[in-house]
Every structure is written in structure tokens, then in C-alpha cells.
Length: 568
Image 1: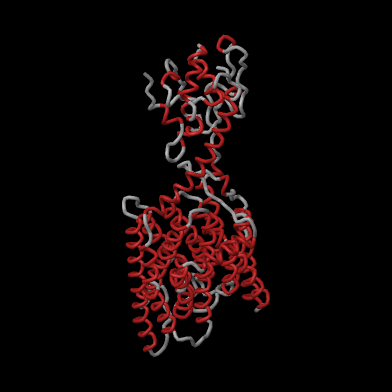
Image 2 (image 1 turned 180 degrees about the vertical axis):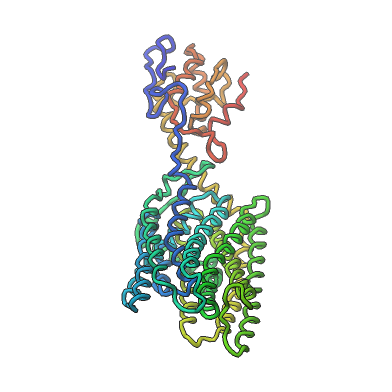
């Protein structure tokens, strides 16, 4: 079937339709939709982000599980707050790549300090890692929350938490294998650091596989909204404005305390557990975070429960676990201080079970709390740039909490009751302001996010369809420059017309743009005496633009509409 009319179907002086770009005139009558590449899909982007998370911060966490780490945190505090804006300007793929560079240098610094007490390179590596981590933290969270559709975010957050935990699990297995026979307290072997550095170096090449947001496709047809501030100054002003907003100010205590427990865990393990017990902990404890992540994801993605109720149930459950662990820690710490000498818990020896279970549930509740906060800020950000600013503030405040926690534990004679009291107190303090934010959460937030993304795609499709229709029909005389293609207001126009099925799934056109002069156009057709059936086929074939409207998220477009038209 050709997009040009046969001679007998033309009125006096009429010419055929000019073929439009992407029209069927240059294609087979049965066009096959081009397969979308998997490497542009959301799951692939999540795999890339999780791969970097596994190799870079995952190995960093594994080192922290042995009592090393924490030195990079002070340099990451301001960086994470500001670099969400920087990532918006340079793009998330570059932000993720820059974020992966610093971690191997940090591991190398720990190695040189371990073998030769060379502190300058350790501090240099820590500083670079902290700045690099700012890029990584802001980019990573924006990718995990912003690339998936709103209804899948909690699930992909759980996948991300699993990848973060997989790094320490693998690292813990390495630690366990290298240090299983060491029953004393002290530092780990230098070969442990070498293995970690090699794995950390894989983060950069993996990060380079990430696709830009505007090239990523989702299974539901929605696009990723990626508006960008026009200048660097405007971007930083947007971050400043967001930071001063009521919602962010209310959430700051929760952001601050969300990772505060990590500093005390490291001290707890280094003080009271043997090397192989710590290696066991660095391997097994991370399963707690995996369990809690998928448990909380199942609840938060359950569309049958109202979004506010989902959030409230999750938050109350998490606070219950966290408050319980700090009460438990208070009791155990009192027993330890009352003992004649501090214990050295070896695996599966006396006292190990009750002390290690506390570490397990710290991780269980802490990871669930972090995932909940990422999900919560994701409900209030309707585009990727805004989300990057939200996550940058979240990660920066989280890093500030870690910095304070590590600083408190740096003193050899630090009173552990102070750390326990601060963790308990700030956890309770964050309940009321976080509850206020949850109370303002309505189902409309999820709907607005999805609607905004669908509307962006619809606007692009309608603009293409309108231009294609105008171009295709512009050469018709007798009023055909504005007739309605499908004759929604003109039954005569479709009388005896059979529309091929493949058109119904591959046509994009703006119904509103074509509606205006249907009646006058129909009159012109009737008076001309031409074959309307053939003309309709030709015109439709000419304005095929290759994008299936029936595959858009809300089903708008010609595909579903045509099947409902009844012509008398």
C-alpha cells in the first residue's frame, strides 16, 4: 500500500501526499516495532548502580566491619550536600564514575598505614574518597529512586540495599577465610587490604556503563523527567531553597540519626570481639539488612494499602526495633562495666550470642530506616533533578551524623553510655517531625509523579503527531488541510472504511489538533465525490510516525480510541 493516491482517487489538480519522516511510505505494510535495547532498560541501570555500590562503598563497609574506616566521613559531609547539584549539571553517569574513583585510593591508604604506619597517604586517600563519595552518594540514590517507576521504587531500593550488603558479605567471607584462626583482638592481615583494593578498582569501568536518564525506557511507557536549572547558580539556589523548606527541616533529625549507629557498632566490635568474631560479623550481619530491606519493600510497594498508611506502619515498626536495640545495649553495657575485666567475645563462646544479636538487630533496623527515608523523599520529588537535590541533602546529613559518631568513638576512654544515650535520644526526637511529614503524604504524590512523567511523554507524542498530520494533509484541496483523520465528529468520513490493524497500534496523532473543522471538511469530501475509503487509508499511512500510542501508560492515543468508534 502506497502513501500516494492513485490518479483516479484525486480531485482536479490534486497531488499525492508527500511522505513524512518515519511514514509507512518507506516501510513495509506491516512494520515491526523496533526492539528496545536492554542496556537502556531500568533493570540494567539498577544493575550498573548496584555493581558500583558493591565494588566501592561495599568494600569500604567491609573494612569498617573490621574496625577500620570512618576517616573519610568528615570530607564527605559538605560534598554530598552540594554535589547533588553538580551531578544535575554534569549528568548522573559522570557523577557515578567520579564517585567510584576515590575508594581504591582510600583502601590503598589503609594498606600503607597498616604495613608502614604511613599516615599522610591514608589522610590524602581519605580526603579524596570523601569528595568522591559525595558524587557517588548523590548520584547513586538519584538513580535508584528516580529511574524506576513510582510503584517499583521500594523494590529496587531493596535490590540496592542487597547490593550494598553483598559487598560486606563478600568482604566478610574474605576476612573470615584470612583470619579464621586468629583468636585475639588487633588488626587484620595486610593481604586483606590488597584483595579489597583490587575489587574497588572495578567500580570505575562498571560506572561507565550507565545510560543517561533521557535514554532510559520503562516498562510502563513513562519517561524520566529530567529538567535542569539553566545555570550553575540557579542549581545551587535550588538546593539552598530546598534545604530551607519546612519538609526537609522536619526530616533533618531522621537523616542525621539514620547512620549514626554505625560508628558505635564499629567500636563495639573492635572493643569486645576477637578478630575472627568480627570477621564473622562482617560476613553474616549484612544478611540482616537484606531481610529488612525486602520486608519493608513489600509493604511500601503494596498499592492495595493507602500510601500514608503504608508509610506510618513502616515507620512505627522501624522505630520499635531501633528503640528496643538501644534499651538492650544499655543493659549489656551496664553488665560489661560492672564486670571485673572487659570481655573478648569469641564466636559461639559464652556471652557471644546475646552481644552479637544486638549487632544483628542494629543492622536490621538501621537498613530498614535508611530505605524508608529514601522512599519517603522519593514521594515528594517529581523529577530527577529535584530528586538528586533531595538525596544529596539526605546523604550529606547522614554523613554528618556518621562523622559525629566516628569522632565520639575516636577517644580511647570514651564513655559508651554517651553514644547509646545520643542514639536513643535522637531516635525518639525524630519521631514527631517525621510523623508530621508522613501526615502530609497523600496518594496524590504517587499519582502526580506518574502523571507528570506520562504527560511529558504524551506532550512529545502529540507534538510529533500534530506536525506529521499537518504536513501530510497540507496538500489536499477542498478543505482537507484540517479535516479530522478519524472523523470522530463526522460519521460519513469513515463510512465503508476498513482500517488495517497495524495502523491502530502504530499511529500517533493529536485528536484535539484534528477536531476543529470536521464538519466543513466532511462537506468538502461529499461534494468532491472522491473515494473517501481510499483517501482515509492513504492519509493514515502517510502520517504513521512509528510510536505506538496504544503502548503509552494511560492508554491515550488512536490505538484504543479507534476500536470504540461505531460508524452508522
